[in-house]
Image (cartoon, rainbow, N blue to C red):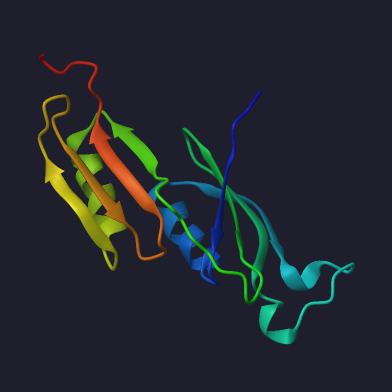
Length: 138
């Protein structure tokens, strides 16, 4: 079995995946636009929107799409958890994801992690970013 994450965006899927591709040194392995589907009638404004996209990175894969016009998008309370062993890499990812977004919790030391913080990126996706707790002194 394999678990895949599929994100739905409010028209900015391509921009989000472009950011994630660069940030996570990933590769877009599939991209299908709404206007490329010969079985579905799509209005002109929606033709370039993303119907399905797949990004493969070293340790994970993310799939996504733009919601159809008029369909509300909500991320709820769900979040991605990124766990790092390298503090400099953690800080870079935190800074990139928080740029234009919202810092929910600043990077701080916790009782179980050398550094932990939470952001909602400019695309509305929530990220919990932390150092691994494998070597943390308890």
